Image 1: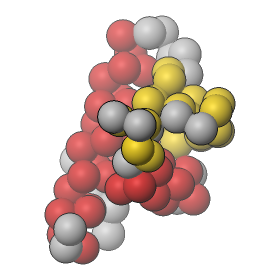
Image 2 (image 1 turned 135 degrees about the vertical axis):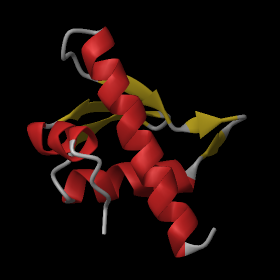
Image 3 (image 1 turned 30 degrees about the vertical axis):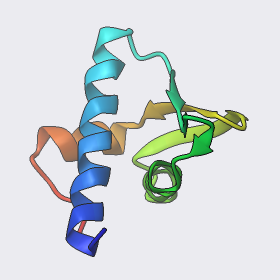
Amino acid sequence: MTSDQRNEYRLSLLKDLYDEHFKHGGSAITVKVEKDGKIDQELVTALQYLDDKRLLDSKILHRGAYQARITAYGIDLIETGGNLR
């Protein structure tokens, strides 16, 4: 995956978390990172990156899942049409 593709992937993930935030009244959601018995490393590193940027709060629930909640910074970034660079 190129750096531009990773940037788009992370932004898409953040948009998905934004949508889920409002569907579930601001509750954290479970993000499954294990598919077919393998950890999706792109998804894990995307979650870690967004957490490091304070655009979401995440924590590991168990090997195959994270708990994630978009932050106010993440909401603002989506609502202003911003990007991650």
